[in-house]
Length: 98
Image (cartoon, rainbow, N blue to C red; front, side, top):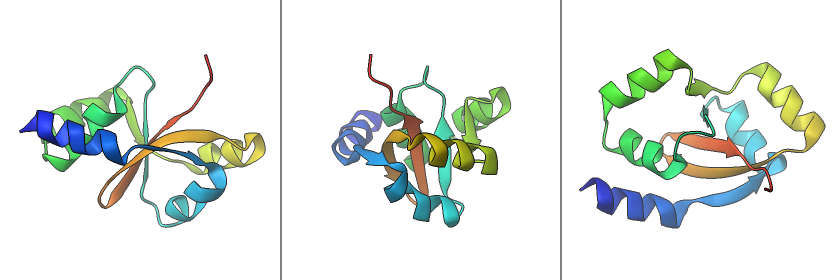
């Protein structure tokens, strides 16, 4: 089942600018996912209600709610993100070109 969820989440992933993400931040639904984690996998685990995994990531700081400091930095840098909706949350990773 998680493979099916992952495939669905992968189709829903998009690159967004801060201007597009701002309204979601204002609603308090933006979740930051550490770059070492797979954004699609994390989203699938949110949707599947994998509480143990999510709690472990929260405890380790690999998943956090976006903070005011994050928002100010993103506004200053005009950040770009990979994003996916795992309702009601919008999970994001900052996009960096390699």
